[in-house]
Image (cartoon, rainbow, N blue to C red; front, top):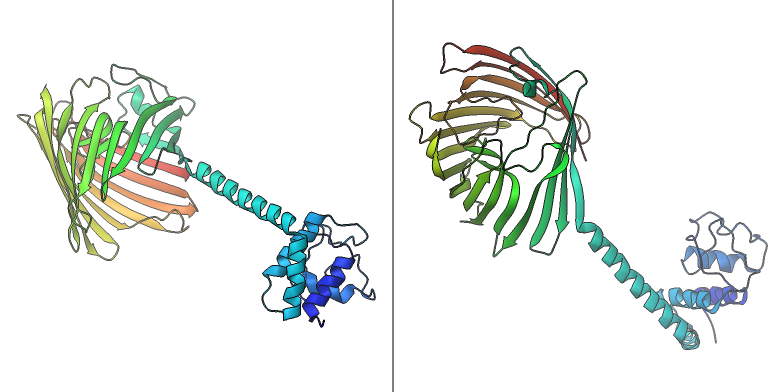
Length: 427
Protein backbone atom coordinates (compact mmCIF):
# COMPACT_ATOMS: atom_id res chain seq x y z
CA UNK A 1 0.00 0.00 0.00
CA UNK A 2 1.46 3.34 -1.06
CA UNK A 3 0.66 6.31 1.20
CA UNK A 4 0.93 9.98 0.25
CA UNK A 5 2.91 12.51 2.28
CA UNK A 6 -0.02 13.54 4.47
CA UNK A 7 -0.97 9.99 5.43
CA UNK A 8 2.60 8.94 6.02
CA UNK A 9 3.18 11.93 8.24
CA UNK A 10 0.03 11.19 10.19
CA UNK A 11 1.03 7.60 10.84
CA UNK A 12 4.52 8.67 11.93
CA UNK A 13 2.85 11.07 14.33
CA UNK A 14 0.67 8.29 15.73
CA UNK A 15 3.72 6.15 16.52
CA UNK A 16 5.13 9.02 18.54
CA UNK A 17 2.14 9.16 20.92
CA UNK A 18 0.82 12.48 19.66
CA UNK A 19 -0.89 14.94 22.00
CA UNK A 20 -3.98 16.87 20.89
CA UNK A 21 -4.21 19.89 23.19
CA UNK A 22 -3.68 23.67 23.49
CA UNK A 23 -2.49 26.09 20.83
CA UNK A 24 -2.62 25.91 17.06
CA UNK A 25 0.43 25.10 14.91
CA UNK A 26 3.13 27.63 14.22
CA UNK A 27 3.12 29.78 11.14
CA UNK A 28 5.05 28.77 8.03
CA UNK A 29 8.79 29.25 8.52
CA UNK A 30 8.65 28.88 12.32
CA UNK A 31 9.49 25.81 14.37
CA UNK A 32 6.26 24.05 15.23
CA UNK A 33 7.54 22.58 18.52
CA UNK A 34 10.51 23.82 20.53
CA UNK A 35 11.26 20.40 22.05
CA UNK A 36 11.54 18.48 18.74
CA UNK A 37 15.10 18.75 17.34
CA UNK A 38 15.37 19.48 13.64
CA UNK A 39 17.65 16.45 13.18
CA UNK A 40 15.12 14.08 14.76
CA UNK A 41 13.80 11.51 12.29
CA UNK A 42 10.17 12.59 12.94
CA UNK A 43 10.72 16.37 12.71
CA UNK A 44 9.49 16.83 9.13
CA UNK A 45 6.43 14.65 9.67
CA UNK A 46 5.40 16.47 12.85
CA UNK A 47 6.09 19.86 11.32
CA UNK A 48 3.90 18.96 8.33
CA UNK A 49 1.05 17.77 10.57
CA UNK A 50 1.24 20.86 12.78
CA UNK A 51 1.18 23.31 9.91
CA UNK A 52 -1.66 21.38 8.28
CA UNK A 53 -3.72 21.72 11.47
CA UNK A 54 -3.90 17.99 12.26
CA UNK A 55 -1.90 18.09 15.50
CA UNK A 56 -1.36 20.81 18.07
CA UNK A 57 1.04 21.36 20.93
CA UNK A 58 0.97 22.76 24.42
CA UNK A 59 0.62 26.39 25.45
CA UNK A 60 4.39 26.65 26.01
CA UNK A 61 5.09 25.63 22.38
CA UNK A 62 6.30 22.08 23.23
CA UNK A 63 5.13 18.78 21.80
CA UNK A 64 6.00 16.43 24.71
CA UNK A 65 6.27 13.38 22.45
CA UNK A 66 7.50 11.17 25.29
CA UNK A 67 4.06 11.31 26.94
CA UNK A 68 1.55 8.60 25.99
CA UNK A 69 -1.59 10.13 24.53
CA UNK A 70 -5.11 9.14 25.49
CA UNK A 71 -7.59 7.50 23.16
CA UNK A 72 -9.58 10.77 23.11
CA UNK A 73 -6.51 12.65 21.95
CA UNK A 74 -5.99 10.00 19.29
CA UNK A 75 -9.62 10.33 18.21
CA UNK A 76 -9.18 14.09 17.95
CA UNK A 77 -6.28 13.63 15.53
CA UNK A 78 -8.25 11.15 13.44
CA UNK A 79 -11.20 13.54 13.30
CA UNK A 80 -8.98 16.39 12.09
CA UNK A 81 -7.36 14.19 9.49
CA UNK A 82 -10.77 13.07 8.23
CA UNK A 83 -11.78 16.70 7.72
CA UNK A 84 -8.91 17.26 5.25
CA UNK A 85 -9.90 17.01 1.61
CA UNK A 86 -8.15 14.84 -0.97
CA UNK A 87 -5.88 11.79 -0.47
CA UNK A 88 -5.62 8.49 -2.30
CA UNK A 89 -7.89 5.47 -2.06
CA UNK A 90 -5.33 3.91 0.29
CA UNK A 91 -5.46 7.02 2.47
CA UNK A 92 -9.21 6.77 2.74
CA UNK A 93 -8.99 3.07 3.56
CA UNK A 94 -6.62 3.76 6.46
CA UNK A 95 -8.85 6.55 7.69
CA UNK A 96 -11.89 4.28 7.56
CA UNK A 97 -10.07 1.71 9.70
CA UNK A 98 -9.03 4.39 12.15
CA UNK A 99 -12.57 5.74 12.27
CA UNK A 100 -13.88 2.26 13.01
CA UNK A 101 -11.29 1.73 15.74
CA UNK A 102 -11.99 5.06 17.42
CA UNK A 103 -15.66 5.37 16.51
CA UNK A 104 -16.95 5.55 20.08
CA UNK A 105 -14.47 8.27 21.00
CA UNK A 106 -15.31 10.22 17.85
CA UNK A 107 -18.98 9.95 18.73
CA UNK A 108 -18.29 11.22 22.25
CA UNK A 109 -16.26 14.12 20.87
CA UNK A 110 -19.07 15.05 18.47
CA UNK A 111 -21.62 14.87 21.26
CA UNK A 112 -19.46 17.11 23.44
CA UNK A 113 -18.98 19.61 20.60
CA UNK A 114 -22.75 19.69 20.00
CA UNK A 115 -23.42 20.21 23.70
CA UNK A 116 -20.85 23.01 23.88
CA UNK A 117 -22.36 24.67 20.81
CA UNK A 118 -25.82 24.56 22.37
CA UNK A 119 -24.51 25.95 25.65
CA UNK A 120 -22.73 28.80 23.88
CA UNK A 121 -25.95 29.65 22.03
CA UNK A 122 -27.94 29.52 25.30
CA UNK A 123 -25.42 31.78 27.07
CA UNK A 124 -25.52 34.26 24.19
CA UNK A 125 -29.32 34.29 24.26
CA UNK A 126 -29.35 34.87 28.03
CA UNK A 127 -26.88 37.76 27.74
CA UNK A 128 -28.94 39.37 24.98
CA UNK A 129 -32.03 39.32 27.22
CA UNK A 130 -30.51 41.90 29.59
CA UNK A 131 -29.14 45.26 28.50
CA UNK A 132 -28.11 48.18 30.74
CA UNK A 133 -27.32 51.53 29.14
CA UNK A 134 -27.56 55.26 29.74
CA UNK A 135 -25.24 58.16 30.50
CA UNK A 136 -23.58 60.12 33.30
CA UNK A 137 -23.72 63.93 33.07
CA UNK A 138 -21.79 66.71 34.71
CA UNK A 139 -23.64 70.04 34.33
CA UNK A 140 -23.05 73.63 35.33
CA UNK A 141 -25.54 76.52 35.01
CA UNK A 142 -25.14 80.26 35.34
CA UNK A 143 -28.54 81.94 35.65
CA UNK A 144 -28.82 85.67 36.42
CA UNK A 145 -32.34 85.34 37.77
CA UNK A 146 -32.44 82.29 40.01
CA UNK A 147 -35.82 82.40 41.78
CA UNK A 148 -35.92 79.14 43.75
CA UNK A 149 -33.77 76.46 45.36
CA UNK A 150 -34.81 74.02 42.63
CA UNK A 151 -33.18 76.28 40.04
CA UNK A 152 -29.92 76.29 42.02
CA UNK A 153 -29.89 72.49 41.89
CA UNK A 154 -29.25 72.25 38.16
CA UNK A 155 -25.48 72.36 38.66
CA UNK A 156 -25.00 68.69 39.33
CA UNK A 157 -23.74 65.22 38.62
CA UNK A 158 -26.53 63.19 37.07
CA UNK A 159 -26.98 59.58 35.95
CA UNK A 160 -29.73 58.33 33.65
CA UNK A 161 -29.81 54.52 33.74
CA UNK A 162 -32.00 52.34 31.51
CA UNK A 163 -32.59 48.61 31.79
CA UNK A 164 -34.05 46.46 29.02
CA UNK A 165 -35.16 42.88 29.75
CA UNK A 166 -36.31 40.75 26.84
CA UNK A 167 -39.42 38.78 27.73
CA UNK A 168 -40.06 37.27 24.30
CA UNK A 169 -39.74 38.15 20.63
CA UNK A 170 -42.69 40.55 21.09
CA UNK A 171 -42.29 41.98 24.61
CA UNK A 172 -39.53 43.84 26.45
CA UNK A 173 -39.75 45.00 30.07
CA UNK A 174 -37.90 48.25 30.83
CA UNK A 175 -37.00 50.57 33.69
CA UNK A 176 -35.42 54.00 34.07
CA UNK A 177 -33.57 55.34 37.11
CA UNK A 178 -32.45 58.96 37.47
CA UNK A 179 -29.96 60.06 40.11
CA UNK A 180 -28.99 63.67 40.89
CA UNK A 181 -26.02 64.59 43.03
CA UNK A 182 -25.78 68.36 43.29
CA UNK A 183 -22.54 70.24 43.66
CA UNK A 184 -21.47 71.18 47.16
CA UNK A 185 -22.89 74.56 48.16
CA UNK A 186 -26.14 74.16 46.23
CA UNK A 187 -29.40 73.56 48.04
CA UNK A 188 -30.68 70.06 47.38
CA UNK A 189 -34.41 69.62 47.50
CA UNK A 190 -36.71 66.68 47.03
CA UNK A 191 -40.43 66.40 46.64
CA UNK A 192 -43.08 63.75 46.70
CA UNK A 193 -46.70 63.91 45.67
CA UNK A 194 -49.75 61.89 44.95
CA UNK A 195 -48.73 60.63 41.52
CA UNK A 196 -44.98 60.12 41.95
CA UNK A 197 -43.81 57.47 44.39
CA UNK A 198 -40.29 58.82 44.81
CA UNK A 199 -37.95 61.65 43.98
CA UNK A 200 -35.00 61.47 41.62
CA UNK A 201 -32.49 60.22 44.17
CA UNK A 202 -31.51 56.91 42.63
CA UNK A 203 -34.68 54.86 42.91
CA UNK A 204 -36.33 53.35 39.86
CA UNK A 205 -38.79 56.05 38.80
CA UNK A 206 -40.26 54.47 35.66
CA UNK A 207 -41.33 50.93 34.83
CA UNK A 208 -43.05 49.93 31.61
CA UNK A 209 -43.26 47.29 28.87
CA UNK A 210 -42.93 47.72 25.12
CA UNK A 211 -44.51 45.29 22.69
CA UNK A 212 -44.93 44.71 18.98
CA UNK A 213 -47.81 43.22 17.01
CA UNK A 214 -48.85 42.66 13.42
CA UNK A 215 -46.67 44.16 10.72
CA UNK A 216 -45.03 47.12 12.41
CA UNK A 217 -47.50 47.77 15.24
CA UNK A 218 -46.25 48.74 18.69
CA UNK A 219 -47.57 49.40 22.20
CA UNK A 220 -46.11 50.93 25.38
CA UNK A 221 -47.77 50.27 28.75
CA UNK A 222 -46.81 51.63 32.17
CA UNK A 223 -45.03 54.66 33.63
CA UNK A 224 -42.53 56.24 31.29
CA UNK A 225 -41.54 59.53 29.66
CA UNK A 226 -43.85 60.43 26.74
CA UNK A 227 -43.94 63.42 24.40
CA UNK A 228 -46.37 64.92 21.87
CA UNK A 229 -44.99 67.02 19.02
CA UNK A 230 -41.56 67.19 17.44
CA UNK A 231 -40.27 69.35 20.31
CA UNK A 232 -42.51 67.78 22.98
CA UNK A 233 -44.45 71.00 23.41
CA UNK A 234 -48.03 69.86 23.96
CA UNK A 235 -46.88 67.20 26.43
CA UNK A 236 -43.37 66.15 27.44
CA UNK A 237 -42.82 64.31 30.69
CA UNK A 238 -43.50 61.31 32.86
CA UNK A 239 -46.97 59.77 32.56
CA UNK A 240 -48.81 56.62 33.54
CA UNK A 241 -50.79 55.07 30.73
CA UNK A 242 -50.69 53.36 27.37
CA UNK A 243 -49.69 54.45 23.88
CA UNK A 244 -49.91 52.41 20.70
CA UNK A 245 -49.33 52.89 17.00
CA UNK A 246 -49.47 51.27 13.60
CA UNK A 247 -47.89 52.17 10.23
CA UNK A 248 -50.20 53.79 7.70
CA UNK A 249 -47.93 53.33 4.70
CA UNK A 250 -44.58 51.81 3.77
CA UNK A 251 -42.76 55.14 4.07
CA UNK A 252 -42.98 55.28 7.88
CA UNK A 253 -46.09 57.41 8.52
CA UNK A 254 -47.82 56.12 11.66
CA UNK A 255 -51.13 56.60 13.43
CA UNK A 256 -51.19 56.47 17.22
CA UNK A 257 -53.61 56.52 20.13
CA UNK A 258 -52.88 57.22 23.78
CA UNK A 259 -54.15 57.53 27.33
CA UNK A 260 -51.86 59.46 29.70
CA UNK A 261 -52.03 60.55 33.33
CA UNK A 262 -49.15 62.95 34.19
CA UNK A 263 -47.35 62.20 37.45
CA UNK A 264 -45.69 65.55 38.14
CA UNK A 265 -46.40 67.61 41.27
CA UNK A 266 -50.05 68.64 41.49
CA UNK A 267 -51.24 66.63 38.48
CA UNK A 268 -54.83 65.50 39.06
CA UNK A 269 -56.04 64.88 35.52
CA UNK A 270 -55.65 62.49 32.61
CA UNK A 271 -55.91 62.85 28.84
CA UNK A 272 -56.58 60.70 25.83
CA UNK A 273 -56.28 61.32 22.13
CA UNK A 274 -54.79 60.51 18.75
CA UNK A 275 -51.58 61.38 16.94
CA UNK A 276 -49.94 60.98 13.55
CA UNK A 277 -46.24 61.29 12.79
CA UNK A 278 -43.69 60.43 10.13
CA UNK A 279 -42.74 61.40 6.56
CA UNK A 280 -45.45 62.61 4.19
CA UNK A 281 -43.18 63.46 1.27
CA UNK A 282 -39.66 63.23 -0.02
CA UNK A 283 -38.39 65.97 2.29
CA UNK A 284 -41.18 66.70 4.74
CA UNK A 285 -42.39 65.05 7.93
CA UNK A 286 -45.15 65.85 10.39
CA UNK A 287 -45.98 65.22 14.04
CA UNK A 288 -49.53 66.19 14.99
CA UNK A 289 -51.64 65.24 18.01
CA UNK A 290 -54.94 66.09 19.69
CA UNK A 291 -55.54 65.47 23.40
CA UNK A 292 -58.81 65.67 25.34
CA UNK A 293 -58.52 66.29 29.10
CA UNK A 294 -60.99 64.77 31.58
CA UNK A 295 -61.52 68.02 33.55
CA UNK A 296 -61.15 71.78 33.09
CA UNK A 297 -57.71 73.05 34.05
CA UNK A 298 -55.82 76.33 33.63
CA UNK A 299 -55.16 75.29 30.02
CA UNK A 300 -58.82 74.36 29.39
CA UNK A 301 -59.87 70.80 28.61
CA UNK A 302 -58.11 70.10 25.32
CA UNK A 303 -54.95 70.83 23.36
CA UNK A 304 -53.42 70.11 19.99
CA UNK A 305 -50.00 70.40 18.35
CA UNK A 306 -48.99 70.83 14.71
CA UNK A 307 -45.33 70.05 14.01
CA UNK A 308 -43.34 69.73 10.81
CA UNK A 309 -39.75 69.38 9.72
CA UNK A 310 -37.81 69.69 6.46
CA UNK A 311 -34.22 69.83 5.22
CA UNK A 312 -33.49 73.25 3.77
CA UNK A 313 -30.08 72.19 2.44
CA UNK A 314 -27.43 69.59 3.09
CA UNK A 315 -26.85 69.42 6.87
CA UNK A 316 -29.48 72.13 7.52
CA UNK A 317 -32.83 71.14 9.07
CA UNK A 318 -35.77 73.35 10.05
CA UNK A 319 -38.37 72.26 12.64
CA UNK A 320 -41.48 74.18 13.66
CA UNK A 321 -44.19 73.56 16.29
CA UNK A 322 -47.49 75.27 17.04
CA UNK A 323 -49.57 74.38 20.10
CA UNK A 324 -53.00 75.61 21.19
CA UNK A 325 -55.11 74.77 24.24
CA UNK A 326 -58.66 75.50 25.35
CA UNK A 327 -57.63 78.29 27.73
CA UNK A 328 -59.21 81.72 27.26
CA UNK A 329 -55.91 83.65 27.03
CA UNK A 330 -52.17 83.08 26.57
CA UNK A 331 -53.21 79.77 25.06
CA UNK A 332 -50.54 79.17 22.38
CA UNK A 333 -46.96 77.92 22.20
CA UNK A 334 -44.72 78.50 19.19
CA UNK A 335 -41.18 77.33 18.52
CA UNK A 336 -38.80 77.19 15.57
CA UNK A 337 -35.51 75.32 15.57
CA UNK A 338 -32.71 75.37 12.98
CA UNK A 339 -30.06 72.63 13.14
CA UNK A 340 -26.74 72.49 11.33
CA UNK A 341 -25.11 69.07 11.13
CA UNK A 342 -25.22 66.90 14.25
CA UNK A 343 -23.11 64.72 16.51
CA UNK A 344 -22.27 61.05 16.12
CA UNK A 345 -21.13 59.42 19.36
CA UNK A 346 -19.00 56.97 17.36
CA UNK A 347 -17.20 59.79 15.51
CA UNK A 348 -14.93 62.01 17.66
CA UNK A 349 -14.75 65.48 16.17
CA UNK A 350 -18.36 65.50 14.93
CA UNK A 351 -20.41 68.51 15.96
CA UNK A 352 -23.77 70.24 15.60
CA UNK A 353 -25.00 73.82 15.88
CA UNK A 354 -28.54 74.98 16.61
CA UNK A 355 -30.58 78.07 17.21
CA UNK A 356 -34.14 78.28 18.54
CA UNK A 357 -36.84 80.85 18.97
CA UNK A 358 -39.47 79.91 21.56
CA UNK A 359 -42.66 81.58 22.73
CA UNK A 360 -44.47 79.71 25.49
CA UNK A 361 -47.81 81.09 26.63
CA UNK A 362 -48.70 80.94 30.30
CA UNK A 363 -51.55 78.53 29.44
CA UNK A 364 -50.24 77.36 26.08
CA UNK A 365 -49.72 73.65 26.71
CA UNK A 366 -50.74 70.74 28.90
CA UNK A 367 -47.23 70.11 30.21
CA UNK A 368 -44.29 70.77 27.88
CA UNK A 369 -40.77 69.43 28.34
CA UNK A 370 -38.95 72.31 30.04
CA UNK A 371 -35.55 70.70 29.30
CA UNK A 372 -34.24 70.99 32.85
CA UNK A 373 -35.61 74.48 33.44
CA UNK A 374 -34.38 76.13 30.26
CA UNK A 375 -37.86 76.49 28.69
CA UNK A 376 -40.19 78.24 31.11
CA UNK A 377 -43.89 78.84 30.58
CA UNK A 378 -44.91 82.45 29.87
CA UNK A 379 -41.56 83.27 28.28
CA UNK A 380 -40.17 84.08 24.87
CA UNK A 381 -36.65 84.42 23.54
CA UNK A 382 -33.66 82.93 21.73
CA UNK A 383 -31.37 79.99 22.42
CA UNK A 384 -28.02 79.28 20.76
CA UNK A 385 -26.16 76.03 21.25
CA UNK A 386 -23.33 73.78 20.11
CA UNK A 387 -22.72 70.07 20.56
CA UNK A 388 -19.36 68.38 20.12
CA UNK A 389 -17.94 64.84 20.49
CA UNK A 390 -14.40 65.12 21.94
CA UNK A 391 -14.07 61.36 22.47
CA UNK A 392 -16.08 58.32 21.47
CA UNK A 393 -19.41 58.12 23.36
CA UNK A 394 -18.84 61.50 25.03
CA UNK A 395 -20.93 64.54 24.03
CA UNK A 396 -20.28 68.09 25.19
CA UNK A 397 -23.08 70.65 24.86
CA UNK A 398 -22.97 74.37 25.62
CA UNK A 399 -25.91 76.74 25.20
CA UNK A 400 -26.91 80.33 25.91
CA UNK A 401 -30.46 81.62 26.34
CA UNK A 402 -31.80 85.16 26.44
CA UNK A 403 -35.53 85.22 27.15
CA UNK A 404 -38.20 87.52 28.55
CA UNK A 405 -39.77 85.64 31.44
CA UNK A 406 -43.23 86.34 32.90
CA UNK A 407 -43.95 87.95 29.55
CA UNK A 408 -47.67 88.44 30.19
CA UNK A 409 -47.20 90.32 33.48
CA UNK A 410 -45.49 93.71 33.18
CA UNK A 411 -45.01 93.95 36.94
CA UNK A 412 -42.88 90.79 37.24
CA UNK A 413 -41.38 90.61 33.74
CA UNK A 414 -37.59 90.29 33.49
CA UNK A 415 -34.94 89.25 30.97
CA UNK A 416 -33.34 85.96 31.79
CA UNK A 417 -29.76 85.08 30.77
CA UNK A 418 -28.94 81.40 31.12
CA UNK A 419 -25.56 79.85 30.30
CA UNK A 420 -25.27 76.07 30.52
CA UNK A 421 -22.48 73.64 29.75
CA UNK A 422 -22.68 69.89 30.27
CA UNK A 423 -20.82 66.74 29.29
CA UNK A 424 -22.53 63.37 28.83
CA UNK A 425 -20.63 60.08 29.11
CA UNK A 426 -22.71 57.40 27.38
CA UNK A 427 -22.42 53.71 28.18
